[in-house]
Image 1 (cartoon, rainbow, N blue to C red):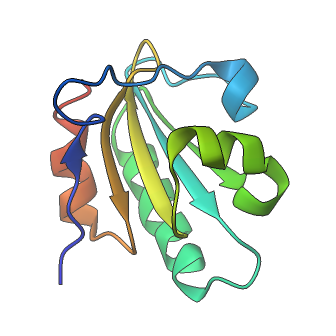
Image 2: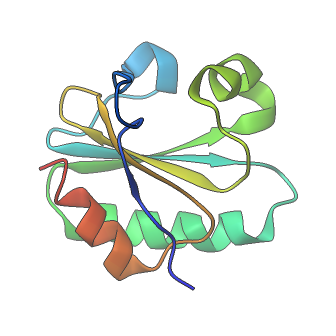
Length: 116
């Protein structure tokens, strides 16, 4: 079953904006794939490979993995309820898509269309 990438944060709510200070790395020039993972999450390893592959394929896209357990404040602020969860940020750090679960490469590439 494909992972669904929702639009931003929903109708009536402003999408959050994240920067290097929040994610612990520089944003990609065009977009950033932010993955929330946990140590014992098997789908997280597969998600890491998919997101890293896409970031390597698409110029200007960065992949950042965040340990959810070590960043509980950020997890709570963003409403992350499961790992893996992927956020797609545009060049300014605005969350334009999000999905929980292990994504397919084609779904990630399609979701990037909203950011670039």
